[in-house]
Amino acid sequence: MKTSILAVAAFGGLVAAPLLAQPAGAPTPPQTRAEMQASIQQRFAARDANHDGFLTADELGANGAAAIARLDTDHDGKISLAEASAAMLAMFDRADTNHDGIVTPEERAAAMAQMGQPAPAPAPAPAATPQPN
Image 1 (cartoon, helix red, strand yellow):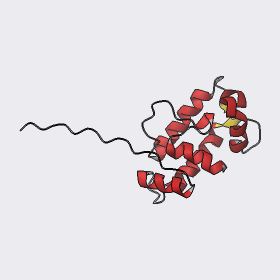
Image 2: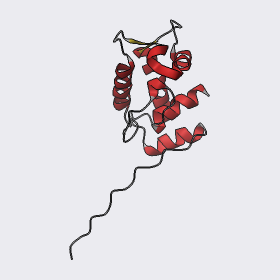
Image 3: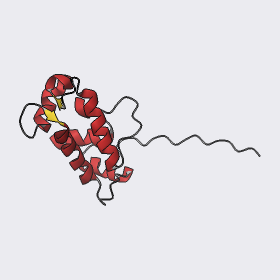
Image 4: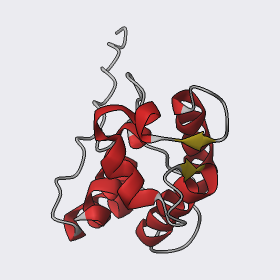
């Protein structure tokens, strides 16, 4: 269950926990490992209100205690960037089945199906531009 919630947030762009929530208007979840790392750092920094390098339950909001319980591997009552990164990057690596550093839409859909979650809807195709005769 814990993995499913985190993976849905990571690969489906859904809000599962305050730390993992995608920013409003995020077009797609990260596709490369580098994009995932940047996304984790950006979301972590946005939540770290006092800029101490840790996230506490207060900074995480209503589901903060649940996020701490899932991600606080050293049991110090707060989440470091390393703890947040390790969990999310491990899920990225599991979804990247060919280990090329890119999670394709097919790999993302397969990872979500494996967890019993619906795949995110594909982005709409751009409208065709009429060609002059």
